[in-house]
Length: 186
Image (cartoon, rainbow, N blue to C red; front, side, top):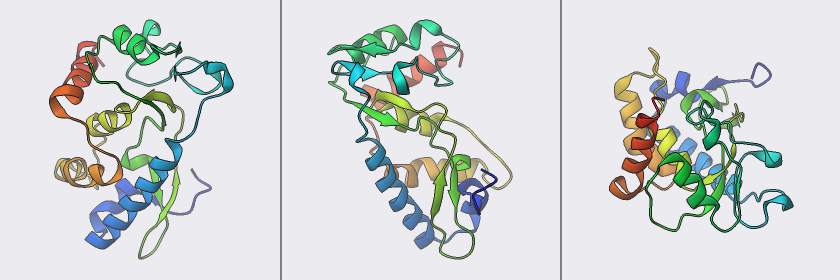
């Protein structure tokens, strides 16, 4: 991070105008769309939920529960993962590569006016997850500071996060996912 010139989105957001905010969201949207197309190694034998190289998932919400980290493979990988987590989502959910921690402190912006995304950092939790995972997690994680207070966080979640990735259905997806997070004491 020290080699990247600029500041985090968390540090810059409050000083950005609406055009700058929307521009950054569009850049992030294209980045998310691009990394969601990455396929796992050939070892997956079809559908795969896990980290790179066939390793168990390292997401903070499941890392203290080894029975949830997988990897899960085969046609029923998503269902196996959701069953292990106790997530009751009944839709057919694709698996995509996710950063799994796309939050304002992990988004580096270029210095000066008209900021651009310089880098997305902290890929330690990245892997192949059900498509809803990244949005749910980005919506849930609280990383407050004096430069990114509760009001900015709520605005980020409600207005700008849906510009970056498709929101999920509250009842069918977010609430079951949130129940999982809260029930595991995470």
